Image (cartoon, rainbow, N blue to C red; front, top):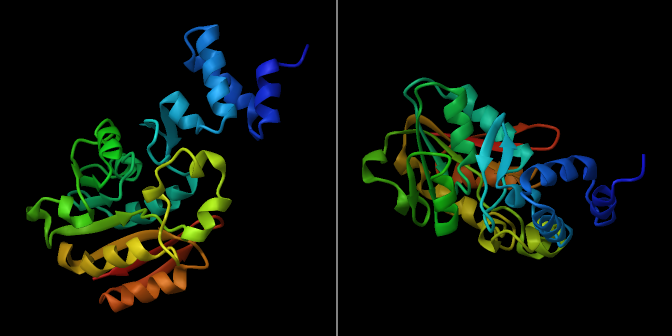
Length: 248
């Protein structure tokens, strides 16, 4: 069988799973011309998920719009930590929600949870509303309904945590095609985490918890940020993911 020219084109551009990507792009394209356009955009570095319009995450098909942060598979570990602590009727907030993938995955895994989500980016909010019913736009807690203050069981957050200087080393599909605000965590990567932690106690119910994805090397500093905010920190590690949990 002759080599597949689309697979060869994708592989030459550095796509590790070229065969899978070729199959997905063919399924998404309505014509040869559209397939060629999708392939050209992928070779140029556009995220595959944005081209397809969806990402697989925790067994769900999550709608993904161009220019919105694409959910990472490692974030399933954050979801798993939240699911362990959520029960029916729990109030869960997916802050810095992007597509809303975290909130959608928790809602799918725990029947009866009340999930809210928020993001500062209007494009992310529009996308998340395709995946979740209650999504608000605004800067962190300012987006949330006041009635949630002091009632939240779980704040589940994938805030940007890449240090500013490290943005340049990221893959082009993230660096050039995702919003900078969804990646850049400031000089040490913890700027947004500090803001989230500082106001978390006001929104959590007694016994509630803040869960944040962070880098393994950043985890001790994230835990210290939690402690300074009055939360009791715990660090959970997986092979490729780290979550810091702070209980009120």
